[in-house]
Length: 250
Image (cartoon, rainbow, N blue to C red; front, side, top):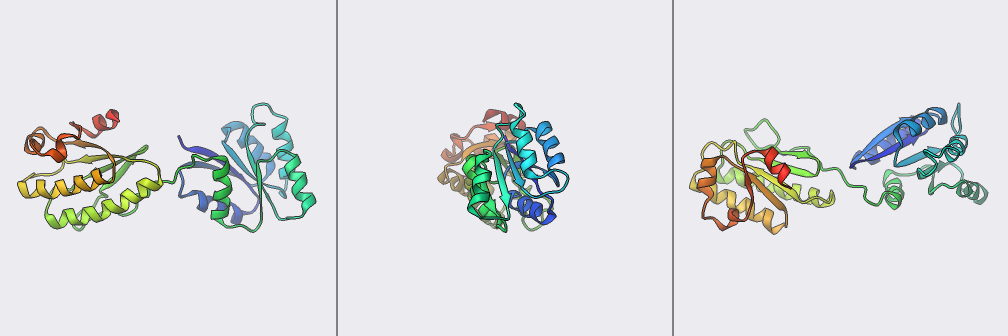
């Protein structure tokens, strides 16, 4: 399940830095530009982490943090405090208030992510769905359902097509490893003619996935299931009649 993170800062630039840094990760981001609105969001959303600036109008970060610690419903939410001052006294005051960590402005997005991962150590990188198209097709090959990647093969399969798909699959395998998922559904149902040449090309793609230790499921029509009988590469892969059935099988 995606983490909920609350960013509270009156600086739009800082909020954009935080938003951009977190855009690569599976999380739901909420934003507020002062402590009053931030406190209301913290009470409503119960985030897994608050990234909190000190100096803000209406209600400062210190005031918001004080009120959070007085509220049993949200007092245990970890807080990373953002401060423009790195002096020892300032840092000690922050630590005494019970924050989990702090970071001094200005900072880079990857520095913040390092601090966040110390608290949310299961923060997962988002699977990148950009691209994934081959020549002559107007839809992406890859879609995602939760932590399951679905590869829907095009209607016509040729050796050149599969070579192109294998290149995209290698990129996707790297992305899946970074996102800590290995579940893949290979959907054959749109293939119009599963000829022997198409099957041989398909087996090469399946072997690539097996070597990468992916947990595989396939979806196929009854005719396609018959065509694949006898091939050891596909005999060990569960085959379902629909993507929905394959998803439920994981």
